[in-house]
Amino acid sequence: MAIVGLGGAGKTQIALSDYAVFWIPVTNFYSMLGAYLEIGRQLQISNVEEGKADVQMLVQRRLSEENSGRWLLVFDNADDIDMWTERAGSTTASDRRINYLPKSKYGSILFTTRS
Image 1 (cartoon, one colour):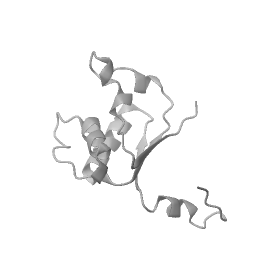
Image 2: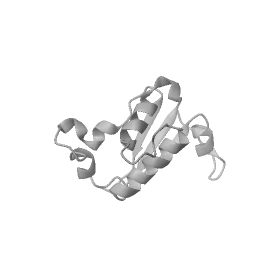
Image 3: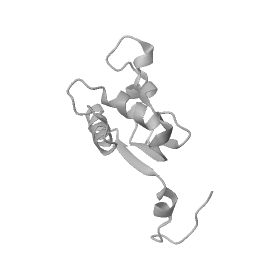
Image 4: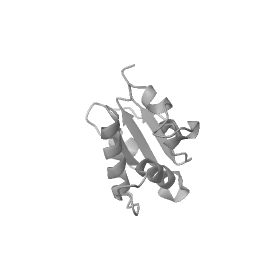
């Protein structure tokens, strides 16, 4: 699909009107976790603000549910590939952050990077 028009005509708003858009700055790990926490609040995930909650896993599970609707998850400035491939505080390969990405036929994930 292509939407064509003059700048400022609202093409992006039309393209995203049926989607929940979640923006995650990945300039560092803490900005990413803060964004995940905010997404958890927006999705009204219970227990998301508990100190020991695995916020990334909770958001992943919710967005992977078919009843979560259509969504776009934007990881902005995802320049550090090691952040995604290294283990997230555990010793098993299944705990890499890339494995925390939601999977849904109703959702899309976009990474922006300068690399």
